[in-house]
Image (cartoon, rainbow, N blue to C red):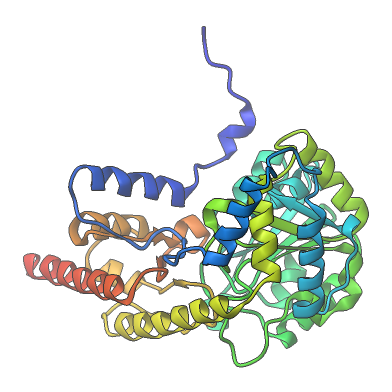
Amino acid sequence: MCAVIATRLSHVKPSATLALNAKVKQLLQEGKAIVNLGVGEPDFDTPAFIKQAAITAINEGFTKYTAVTGIPELKTAIIDKLAKDNGLSYVPQQIIVSTGLKQALFNLLLAVLDPADEVLIPAPYWASYPEMVAITGAIPVIIEGALTNQLKITAQQLQAAITPNTKLLILNSPSNPSGMAYTHEEWRELATVLQAHPNILIASDDMYEKIYWGDTPFVNILNACPELYARTIVFNGVSKTYAMTGWRIGYAAGPATIIEAMELIQSQSTSGANSIAQKAAAAAISGPQEGVVTMAAAYQARHAMVYERLKNIPGVAPLFSTGTFYSFPHVQGLIERLALADDVALCEFLLTEAGVAVLPGSSCGAPGHIRLSFAASLESLNKALDQIEIAINQRLHSHV
């Protein structure tokens, strides 16, 4: 029997990070020593009080189906967090809890997009954004941030990209992969454009909100322009902030009619998030936050070290970023020095010759860059950078 695969999949690429992780695991199984800086996963353990909340939930038999949009305890914690940290007011009907932020965003895309709708995505972007849009049949429209503007888009670029078919704009700050965050003034400039286009929805991916060390407080576009409240959906989760990637809890807050549509989608897919993980997430969000501060400080210190080391490698131009746990240097000069084809070839070289896994910038819409995760110990990072420098020098000397 011949395979019958939906044509929509012909437009969808596999996850670059998952593919890289699979290759790294294969090399490790073959006995090769690899420092994996390609996957965005905190190296810290989930704090003990969060794990204890899950253990208690299991022991108390909290193992049944939950409401599709999340348990009341977690929704209350989310509402309180958004009010306290972000100055945003929501009621339970405006909140949905999902199996990770990725599912929450996918729910939105399936709920609001039709074929021929256009979704604006600033580049560099999280690699999943355009592929998720493509699955819905809608059209991802990429807006390229310039190095001269710290890889952030301008109001003029946003205005030029809008057409009558524009349905949604996806924003992510601090950015995976660039680590750059938009300022209040930059948000205001973008919001001025959006106010003239009242039919465009806005998705604000705030996943790295707490991994931020900018000179000014974190703000998203809704903080800068409350007038956009009725058409903005704010996304967040516990994966990065609390080192809970495997717990798979994300959430969205937005207009009740849109959240209701997302609930309909979710009710026919996962039915809801894991009950035990929801209890743990509620404890994480409402509990002590000292661990979050400690982890963010560690990431900042690692960023400073990685930045200093990268800028001393000829042909590498790192950005001094303000958040996340990624460095996203421009490496076109290094590609040319090593006589390689592109950033993909450079990543292959670093994996096979240096034993270091990093992600090609082209998978994030920014060729000529690489994404290096510093969610690893300083020892591992220094080891990786040592091996990269050695591999580069060996290749250069072999070509002399």
